[in-house]
Image (tube, rainbow, N blue to C red; front, side, top):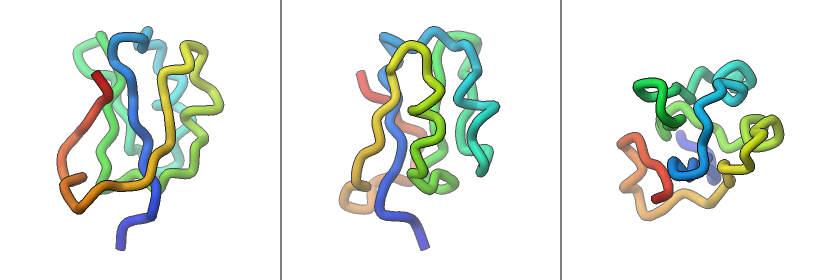
Length: 76
């Protein structure tokens, strides 16, 4: 069962430093092509650890949507 919350990344603000990747206890975050972070919603538990260590402040924890969270998503 998926958790109530999920991390969302603003790719326009992300600096691809990898701090969130190192902090995620579920390996739900990856840096895509060295440009920005992405989350695998099916692995994310919405704990917020990634958001706390993000130096760019580009991560927010939100409630999951209507079940369409089965693909990698970012905020644009």
